[in-house]
Image 1 (cartoon, rainbow, N blue to C red):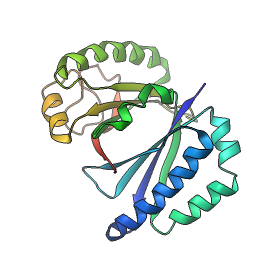
Image 2 (cartoon, rainbow, N blue to C red):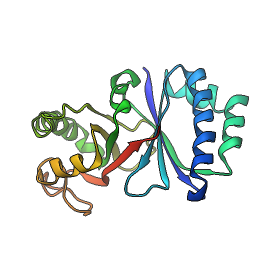
Image 3 (cartoon, helix red, strand yellow):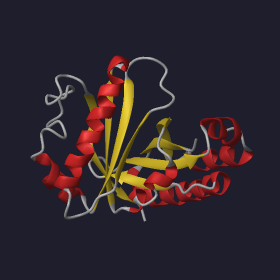
Length: 211
């Protein structure tokens, strides 16, 4: 099954942002040619030194065993190491075709939720309910959104990613701030609305697409 790769990168020197992005885009093009899935880059609004990359693969094996050891990937990593460090990278069970339009949005929001394995089904049920709620909240802007589980999770809580498309960061903040039952308010670690079901990290972090 095709899967989505999500990687978080940090700029080593913000003053070299343009040079870093030129190198990154060249590396992303190499990956795109290899995987035949688009690679998109977003810069975090709250912390502009952070860049998220979204890519697609036919499988985890295609990424880890075919692409990573390749000469093309090694050259791509070498070209960006002066400018960017990889904070983390993993895979989510979202088919790339299901978020192609989402990742063309001017801004996206990403939420990472952690839930005990025994309550994974509860979260899936909650997600279906919340999809309806988000559609009601954002009816005027017709957002795209999707979610999926982290695949390469080696113990501990399960991790769920939720991605949503917004026209701009201000619109996102205004529309969702009042909806306590949808997103946890503030920066506390336990969702109040769902009796401790969810632990939320990276709440409503908004990214603007890098042109």
